[in-house]
Every structure is written in C-alpha cells, then in structure tokens.
Amino acid sequence: MTLAGDDKVLILFRHAKAEQVPGKDDHARELTGRGRKDARAAGQWLHEHGIGPELVLCSSSVRTRQTWDAAVEGGACGETVEFDRAIYNGSPDAVLQELRERAGEAQVVLVVGHNPTMAALASGLTEGDGSSQAHECLAEGFPTSTVAMLRYAGPWSDLGIGTAVLDRCHTARG
Image (cartoon, rainbow, N blue to C red; front, side, top):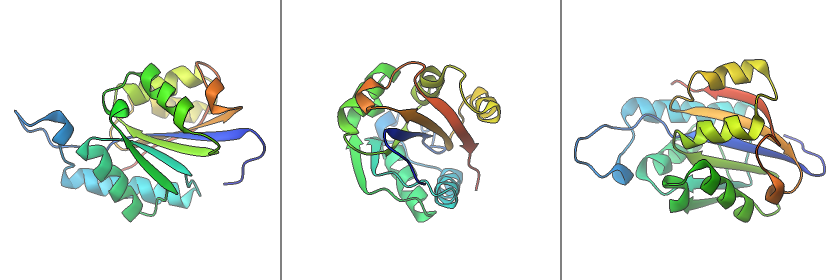
C-alpha cells in the first residue's frame, strides 16, 4: 500500500472467537478452533490487500495475542508489535489516546482489540464518512475477526471524532 505525505491508515481488528468458560479469568480466555481459522483468514485478507502495518498495538489478553499470531500465520505482517493492557480494558477514548501517544511516525497502525470498543472507535472516528459498503459491514455489529480500515490525513495526535474515512470493512471466516 502506497501512502503520500500525511496520509495514514488505521486498521481496527476485533479478536477472533474465544472460548466461554465459566469462572475463567476473562484476560486468560483462549481462541476456539473456529477463532484460529477466522484469524488466519483475516491475516490472509490483510496480506492479499497489501496492508502491512508498521506498528501493531495489541491488547494484552490471551485471545488478542492468539488472534495476531494466527493472523501472521495467514500472511499478515507487522514491523513492531506492542502489547498493551490499556487496550484490553480501555474505552474508545482510552484506546484513541494510546494510539495518539504511541503511533509516532508510522503511517499504518493496526490495533487488535475488543468490542464494544473497536466498533465504537470505528464508528466515532468516521461518523458515516467513507464507503457505504464498508459502513454496511460495520453496521452488522463488528463481529469477531472483523477488520475495519480507516484512512486519515494528518498527525496521529490530531486523530479524533469524525476525522477519518472508513475505506474497507471485512469479517473474516476460515
């Protein structure tokens, strides 16, 4: 993917399907077999579309780490991967603040996180701007293994509500 000047791409990636085990610590929940397949399919989709982030900000939970690992098995790549507990339990505002502070000079950043935060962030940052097909996908509720690609022009520190455009949205199934 070729970007010019201040052009930026933000990819919001909801973790894949995780186990539901009563009494198990939420942070320690693992992916199901279907989740692993779906995450690999998401990685393949990212690879096929030439989307390679310079920075991956990944929630510290087991299921998000496993989602990114499986996506890499499917062909996704990321130059630098950082695990962040603030993304695990963060509100949309908290995740946005982490992004603003940590994205640096990267042009393409991918966040592996959780719902409802990923859906709220995608919706709020774009406020309906962008591809109608992508917004239809977003309206389906941002199911597990959904990837939303937003475009933005400017420094990460200025990214805010209504400043981005939703370019693509894809729910991966393996």
